[in-house]
Structures are given as C-alpha cells and as structure tokens.
Image (cartoon, rainbow, N blue to C red):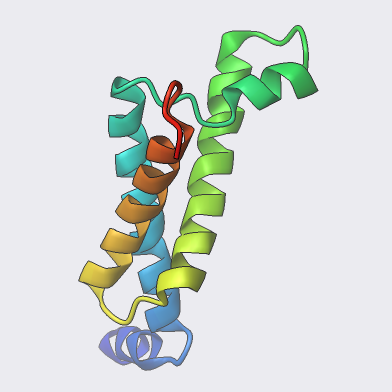
Length: 107
C-alpha cells in the first residue's frame, strides 16, 4: 500500500492536480466569505438566462460557475508551483471578481 501511495504522489500529474484542488478550495472559501459581503456572482445573468427558476437554482448554479471558472482561470493565470500559491490563486480570483462586480463602483 505504501508503494502504491508513493507511486501516486510521485506521478507527474499528481502535483498539478493537487494544486488545482487547493486552488478550487481557495475559490470555495472566498466565495462563501464574499457572499457575506453581498457578492452576487452570476445571479443577475442567470435570472435573465433562466427565467422563473427558484432562488436555490440560481444559488447553486452560480456557486459552481464561480468556483469552477475561478479555479481554472486562477490555475492558468497564476500557474501555482506550491500550495501557498495555489490557495492564493483561488482567493485572488474570486476576490478580484467580487471587487470588479461590486455595484456602484466604477473601475
């Protein structure tokens, strides 16, 4: 069992997948905290694109859109090479979008 685990950890694809998972985690954490500050994400667009759905639908779809696209873009833009960079890429992406989409702000 130790040899199998060692082989998995040493595999070429393991590190990028681990860093992607950490970036995804960073996106989830920042999404949750951003929602406490009024971040709406893609909800306004989704309500126009899929009219007459309930609020739970919009919340769930928005959650997955933000964290999946955020983790992909964060991984591509920041190309993390360690755990701290990966977590920061996840935090940074969602935080940046939350600031840019904040209503009443001209950037």
